[in-house]
Image (cartoon, rainbow, N blue to C red; front, side, top):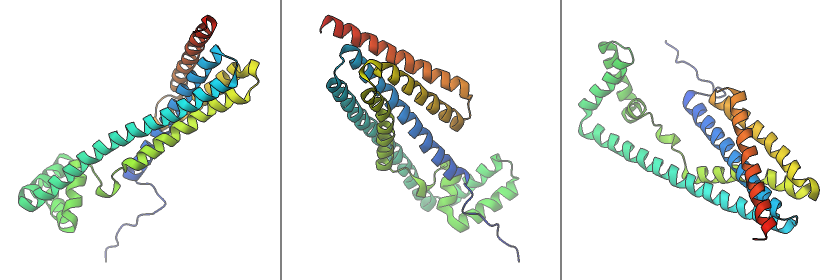
Length: 239
């Protein structure tokens, strides 16, 4: 008797691993957005005043507004993607019912393009269709797993959470540091955090770590320097 290949539950497979990496990458980028936007906001206000209350108010307002905006954008984006995927899945179901022979030939043709001989491709298509026609076709034709569609609510929550976590870092740094040192301390903390997120995102994307870190750190430094200068200018003229 031929034994079926054994799959190990503790070994990540391509689809699930790719999904998890995408989620992790989105989380890192969301945290990075929170760090940069909130840091620029609170440093700008700190450039205009030494009082803690305006800095706290601006930081919390920026955190909440940014988290809501990120969540809403992610929800709309993922909802649109999910609607499109569900429409494609429904179309495939109809075609399997209305034109099964054409769908079988199409599946065989797909496997031919992957390098199988026509006879082998036909056999594979027939066996997969007999086992689960819908799953076979949506995987080969659409690259969609009907059981792994992204939940827009989950995506929105994860995006808001990532942004919030990133925002808390510069907010805590500027509020906890002594008044005379709060801007330099915030600069250092934010740049270190950006270096970390840059390194993580580069590793996840398979790109060069040094280049990603330099881009993020330089961009964050410029953003904070510009907002601080504008805050100092506005505070100096009393606008």
